[in-house]
Picture 1: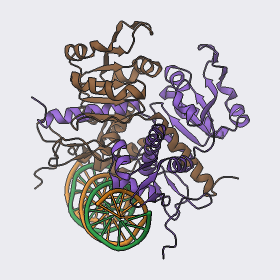
Picture 2 (picture 1 turned 135 degrees about the horizontal axis):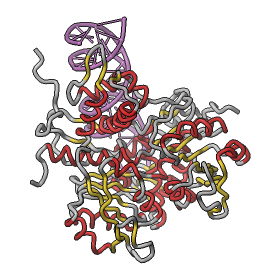
Picture 3 (picture 1 turned 135 degrees about the vertical axis):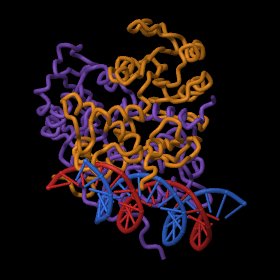
Picture 4 (picture 1 turned 30 degrees about the vertical axis):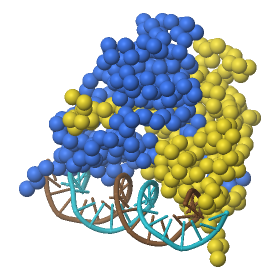
Length: 248
Length: 248
DNA sequence: AATTGTGAAACGCTTCACAGCC
DNA sequence: GGCTGTGAAGCGTTTCACAATT
């Protein structure tokens, strides 16, 4: 008799996080490790599954096999099953997974069953591109405040949102109950701005600044390092050339 | 007597690559696996070391210990030593690493000892932010061509570079000997544009489009999935709340 | 005394393989 | 017959611990 195969599936159950810096730096989260840990890799794949499930749903597919889902996101069927099974069992043997319920479930697991107010710090080119990025809003990430070092340099009104000076940060974060921040400032001020965000009450930061942030361990930081991404490509192509695998 | 501790250090030596999709999807590169593989994680950390080494150099530091380098990038001293030792031994026991030579070495390893012409596809908000991103150019990534579906919608001249229609892609890539592409187009056209890039001769792609690309295995793709990054934050914060670790 | 370089141990993620179910 | 769920095996990465070196 199977008693419990679902560990982190339900609200109320304990579910630890191990958010490494994109898997290349050791875990710094101080969240207590509990029963079954969901790895960062699994979480990231969950996000890919969600995108595919939405596609499937929009084309009217009602079920999907682990095989097909794997093909779509570029992983293996076993991996898909392992990932999904760590939250409970949603599939029907012989049939596959029901698309709509699974999409809903993954949405919940990722914490997307609510709106997340977000503060954007830095109204430069990257900041403004992110502000207008349509996929944030459709996932519930609402940029409700924009702050910049000097708001007079940029157009002060973006789509109805005033760009505020940095000293209004704490007030805005508290009044708007913001927990997530996007950091799109120059590298040399990133640390101090990040500290200000944390002091104001922000607990998760998406960092586009080319700087390593040193923050309390209970703050979740996700870096998007554009230069690093290009360098990884450079390394791969160059290694290939050196290995003599080039077309010649 | 130590004969060889340096495996992939020299041009001409074989050096395989294992570029997973940011470590969450299995390897798809068809580069032959040879003597000592450098993991994707190591490569990504190398990029962080490089940034720190540049900082150290600019403040006049002449040596640095694995400990200090680890502190700066947020990893462990053992990890730093392991990473660096996979390319040879650069340190002096008792003293640490000489900053300038190490920086130079890491630059070479990452393939940054040359200029990389880059084609940017998509002149929307994200594309234009990337075009103006100063850290690409300083690392040798030169955006030498910009292509857009309809170049008339956007200002046709950016900093002296004409925005060209998509049908000029192949010509541009070949004439400018471009090997790297940045994809900043809507998700629904990403696959076809990616295929056009590959057909034109591009071998590495930085993909900002919210779509999974299916390309030949010898093409290196690095995805920047902005929504996924936010969702990872959402998951972490929400899991924390559910685990009852919240301040409330 | 300080710090590297590195086998070996520990750890965690992925893959395998098959029982269980539809 | 087809597909999921999952313990066990396999494998790669990280951490440990210490000999080697300055």
